[in-house]
Structure formats: C-alpha cells, structure tokens
Image (cartoon, rainbow, N blue to C red):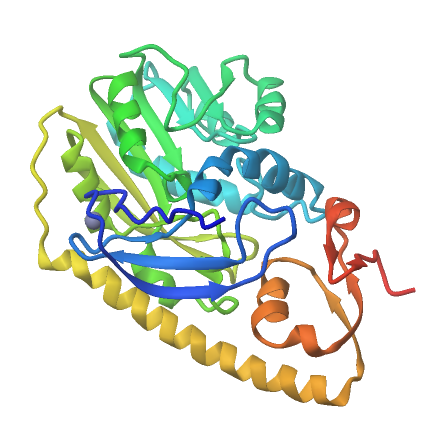
Length: 369
Ligand SMILES: [Zn+2]
C-alpha cells in the first residue's frame, strides 16, 4: 500500500516543497517511524519540516507511550536528557528559561506546563515561589510519575489541552513544538486556554544553529520525533498568524547529556493579543533553508568517511561487536555499510532494548562474556 505523503506546510499550508534529504537511517521492525527521514523545505515560506506519512502522524501518541518512554525509563544513565528530569543539565536549561520569564510573571500566575513529562520544571517554578502549577503530558507513565508530586497533572497534549477556556496566565512549552505534527493547532489551543494578554513561553532547538553542533552525522534528523525545524523567523510567522506578538527571546547553549553536548536552544516569550496579521514572508525566512542545506552537505561528507572505514572492515570480515544500539548504530547499519561487516554481537545496557530489539535476527547482549 502506498502511503499518502503529507507535504502541506505546517505554517503557511502551501503544498509545494523541495525535498532536501531522503535518508535511510534505519528503524526497528515495529517502530511507528519508517526507515527513511524526509526533510522538506516549503517553497512559499521556507519552513523546514519532516515529510511524514499519515500513518506516522497517526502513530505519534503510540510512539511516545510505547517506544520513547520505555526507552527513556529503561536507560541506566540517570544523568541523561530524560524528559522533565531534575538532572543538573536539565536544571541548567530550566534556569535559562526562568531567567527570561521571571521579569514578566509574578507568584500569583496560574501556569500550565505543556509536555511536563516527569514534572521537574514545575518543581523548579515551585521553588521560585509559584504555587498555581499545572501540567499535561501525552505519556501516561510520565503523568503517573509527576502526579505523585503534584495533583494537577493530566494526560493531554499541546494540540488538545484538557482545560477550560481562559484558564491560565502562562503556558510553558519547553522542547515540545518541534515534536508536533500540527503546531498551528497548538497555538490555537494556547490561545483558547490563556487569559487575555496571557504569555506563551517556548523553549526549542534553534535549527539555524544545527551546524554549530558537532555530534554524530545527521544527529538533528536522526531524532525522528523532531518533525519541525524552527528558527525564530518561522516561530514569529506562526505566532503572528495566530494572534500572538513577540515579547522577547534569547538564544542559549544548553547542555544535554554532558557539558560538551550542547543544545543550540532558543527561549521565546509571546503575548496573546488576538490581533492576527496576514502572512508576511521576508527574505530572512529563507536563511534557514540555506543553513540546513549546508548542514546536510557537511554531514554527507562525514558519513562518506565512515562508509570507507566500514567498507575496509567488511573486506576483512573480522568479528565485530557494537556497543550502544541506538539511532547512530541504525544509521551506520543501514546506510554506511555496517550491515556487511561480520557483526557477532550487539551490546546495550538498557533492559528495554535487551528485551525488545532484534536486529538482523540478533537479540542484544548485556556484555560480551
Ligand atoms: Zn510554508
């Protein structure tokens, strides 16, 4: 069955795109996401987004509940980037976000954290003196966990917020918008549940700065659940279409899993004005496409080097073990020739992966011997 590709721009709804990348980065057999990641550029507004199939879009809630959450909860490294955690790196990001919003809010504000996960940003706000704190998340396990600390946590998501109209003074969506298939709907829901002049605070990776990070090849596209690649221009465009105006924003470098692994982050505050503007596309909207094209060329070059190394290894048929079976492994396996090597064992410490992953007929090992 051929799946219908959804190519309509999530911001301006234009239907024509230029495909910038179609990368087979592998997939586990029963994953919601298909093998290939398709990066599209809207020909009208220059927004960059993943061309997902309707099956992938329909499966997003299942992905977060059945794939992403068990994987994160099974991770043995507790200092990682588990959503909503209170790791030192997450706390550093919360403090960057709070320092931007603190002068626009007061302790009486009623706050909703959309995508609160384990709820640690709400705990952080509580320590700053705020008490009217609510949260929603799409993952049932996170909601159950966060509920132990705060009764005001519900199952829900940014595109369908389970609260009445005009309920909040401030909405937080930290590391959320890049995950949404329909960011317009998220802004509409924010508009509905916010009070007049309410604030919407967004934390999000800055796609304009992907090239500044030196992670694994195509890192920002291997995260298949990041389906929108925003810069500030496209966020402003979307916000102005939906009746929000920019109050302030800041770019920051937020550590993810170590001091060296830096998220090129943006924190932005919008205010609900209900004054909508027509679509005004400036030249600066097309800077993002140029930067993403540079990122893609650079990463193709890096991958080419790995292909050569793996091709030499495949020729020797020396026995190989692979440690750490994740997105990076899958890309090398599918696209860079690791599949042709003499892989005798796959090792990972995550019990969830050990129980569920079968790659090329092999189950994962906890250790070699
Ligand atoms: Zn567009």
